[in-house]
Image 1 (cartoon, rainbow, N blue to C red):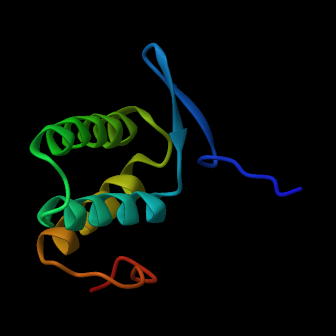
Image 2: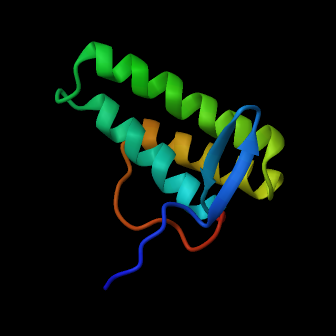
Length: 96
């Protein structure tokens, strides 16, 4: 038997429970979604849906979730790296 959980825990945001990941995982989610959106694979409809969903989730967690400052810093780094096309392992810290 293999135990599996989505996120570290759930955070209640409005009417929904949202899986909360570490700030470093938020970096990977933001960066990797940007890299995926840049590829030719997603349809425009899926891309718009995913863009809105991911943006809302990360914005809510930055504004109302735990570890706000750390999460904001990692999300901004994920945005920068995703827009710059950087892939590979995440940085070990927020230093460039």
